[in-house]
Image 1 (tube, rainbow, N blue to C red):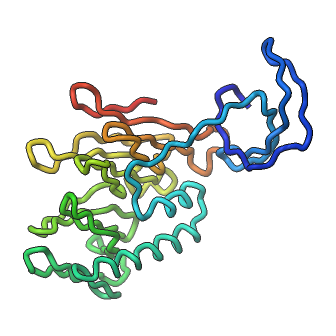
Image 2: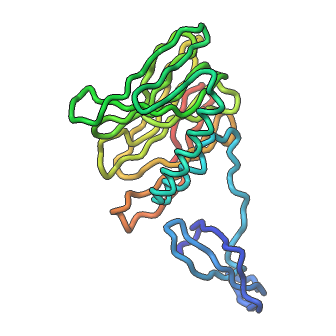
Image 3: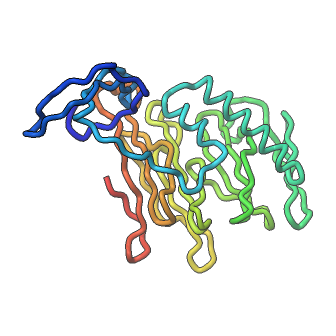
Length: 262
């Protein structure tokens, strides 16, 4: 592995230690069993590695564990995980939403009810099936996944006005609830947005502040490090066996603008 490569320690090491001189320093360390980001297992010398604490998400979402499964292409487990979390959210938010195979009825804070009809699967341009995901009371939005005949996206429904805003990916709030990042992945089928969007509330209005579409990598599992910093894991599509995963950061600069650091 090249210098600087990151991997996961599998909590297994040799019973013996080995004395090895590395760049003028003599180490006496065991060998460690590890797994690379692309799933390969092997052994590395303990004196040649440095342990670091993983980035802790400052504002995790209910679906984070599910999207970790998606990142690792465990599709059946991802779908099962998503449905399990959805069921919990539906029970939690039963005061506001009821869902069945034909429709979703949403009760706004004003008491007004909105009905979303789920059409039968067909090839029409108007076909859409909605799945309720969660309620974000800090910013006043209900979150939906929209499934079209080919592909899909997400939408935010205002909890007072009922106004619906379509976004490209699943939204994750910043710790202070002043911004959110929407990330989605679809390089293979190319029916959906493959990139990230940052939204905020300048002058009290919900607006898109940054949009970046990626052509060769898929953005997975964004984590809020703090209110101005997001870490994203960039994964190659499954047909690309040569490119390695990497991390990028999205930060708010001193001017208040969002920019990508690769």
